Image (cartoon, rainbow, N blue to C red):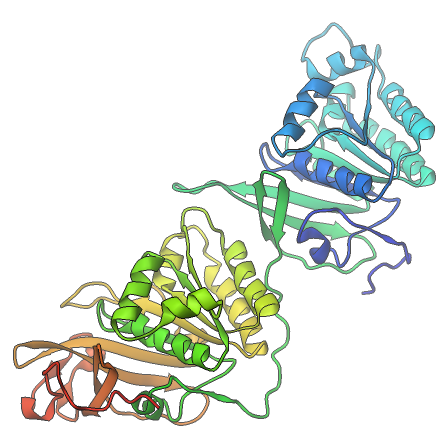
Length: 505
């Protein structure tokens, strides 16, 4: 499908993200419907659309059956706006009262719908606006006796608006006073607004273009947020065809022993799932790749869901990683995520923006457990994550996702199965041997290239990360309760002053 079958110019909406979804904006001189429930942002969409017209030097008109000028001034002031440059249609007082008050003082015979439409058309002919917002068309349903009568008058109004060369937005509430299905057949395009209210946290809003005649657009639901200053839309990640790669460049961790375990290292454009018990070193392993990327002069971004960013930095610095310095230099972007406020679409947008605008080459999600558990209502979250990982793969980004198991001694896997959408799976466990709590690591899966099939002990201390010899007398690691049955002399030295190499290349 072409961008516009009629070849019409596009009209920018002035809403960040929405014009991207619409492939540049709305075809001009047509009528569009914005509908949704209370609090979904219909009026805000309308005013942003008009303010963009004012910015471009166009004539704009706002018509409302519900709110007076003083009420509208209060509404726009909450965003730091004014009504400067926006003409308001002063509808006759008796028409406004008839439309907003449920009473029998006036019948539809006294105030016909065509009188209202004639008033609107007359104002448009006099002021000749380039943009019009009618807020809301729902109130017109009160003035008619049947949906057929409303549809007939709307068709007449639409034709007159098209002839006058005005790009128009109708807003409508999802109520029984207007047959939305019939109304959608009248207009050129439809955008639905919705709101999700979780048990905890801020409401999360979404929009979906459900109809756009003769033009291509990015369908599906897109999250958006209303802040002071207007609406910001976060287009969903488009699941584009996978890029064909002839070779996969190896990304080193900066640790010889660890790279050997991975068969040389991890590949760019792949996703690695690091799973294991609490305290097994999952976040530290991910941090190692961030530090190595910073040493190469490459940018990384870390999203902390489970702990404060200061705690993350203190742990890394205590292990000899200079992430704090790299944060100051701008090579590492460390973000603490408020799980009660962010939506999946907004989170994905932040990652894509970091990749496209900042050139980030390594992304760390710590942890995937906290991210998914914070939004249990989103059943399609794994599908969104799959689309995001496909996007990052095409961009050549290495993605590291941390997933923690439940419990300390008896391990229970949490209900997250992300292994099928990842390229590499690393398992890290705690185990007991000789009265000591130790750690081990193993690579369970690696799609690109070979890797060691062994289970190795891993030591994490001020000397860095060190790996021991394969634990050949080690059993039940995959059951979640690892058990060492060999001689402890084969294990790594417990001394803090060990002369073993830290494996830094």
